Length: 102
Image (cartoon, rainbow, N blue to C red; front, side, top):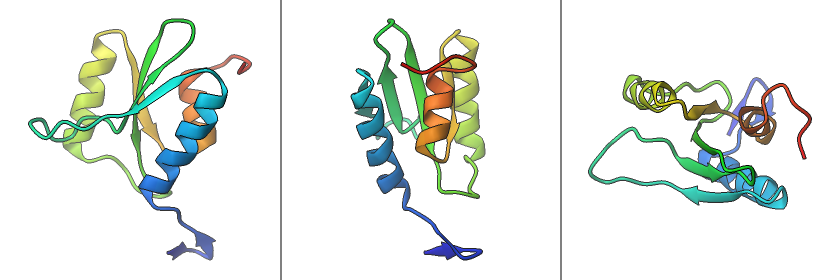
């Protein structure tokens, strides 16, 4: 699929790319699915320094649903980092904000 002449990857493909890149950086990445609770983030990232980061993965130009934003806000309110990402670069920035990545 193309948007403004740019190839759009499916969310599943973006998730796989994120998993590969973060695994290369010694993170553990799980696909998170909760049939009983809609709107939970797609990925759970265990960072080598002991942090946990949750990611809602979306295609370029797409935004999370209100229910997904609700869950992200609840997670952030607990002091755990969570956000919406559209690419590997955004995923890395969410895991390592304002720092030099490993």
